[in-house]
Length: 328
Image 1 (cartoon, rainbow, N blue to C red):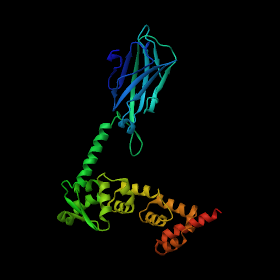
Image 2 (tube, rainbow, N blue to C red):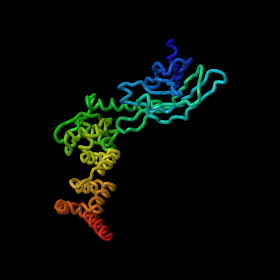
Image 3 (cartoon, rainbow, N blue to C red):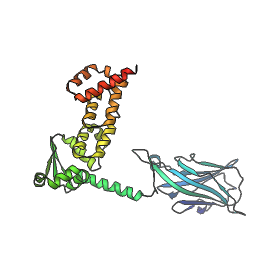
Image 4 (tube, rainbow, N blue to C red):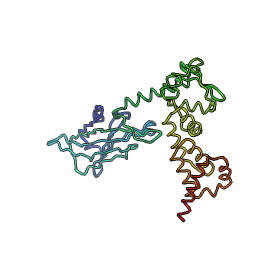
């Protein structure tokens, strides 16, 4: 049998396999063909019925990044009136193995025919969020450009490339870039425009942050922060976000601090919510303490909390308690 019997002709999104004769075969698999990031195969199996399979070539890349395909597949008889069978449009189907897409053909076919696959979209799942991302989507170039720019920005910080200002934390110093800080924070921008001391010394003192927390803060500003370090330094980041007017970081800390409230941290979180005006966090802490009755489980800690907490906050807590009692 000639090599052409296994060859699949392709354009960027279309694949066609021409089969001249299946009479003497019960199974035939095409040569691999490239569509998108993957090598693919078509296969035809003839038992009682004819079945057509489409699947990516098995590899480490496919196992780690299985394609999620949308396509239209047709079977066109090349004899006579060119009868065409069309499978219903397939949308966002993950294909890992040769059994993930099987099209049984109930109509008997003889002679020559063409298997025609039109790929409408190919997606992969983003590693962190699991969100589906099209490899052909409009804006992909923009996303790649943004990712490259962020990576370069992170390298500017991590490799101290042409730094022009020093950040002095409580226990160490880090080099940074005025332009980046000014672009991210209106406070830094104002400082560099009007504060002669910072202009002359080329330094900023952030003595209320440790070097680790300060590094984390800068990593956020430069788009290079890791989730683990963010979780470790949330409270310090919240203080810095409030101080330097980074509203996006403040909101990220606000949302995160609501995720893991427990008996050990609820009073601290409540005080934080009151201090930095975080209404959703405050409501979550109040609900945990009052509605779920956890205030009785931490009586000693709560008694100590009453000695230093803001009077207005204490009033709000007792108002919530009295409102809850009315419901019994």
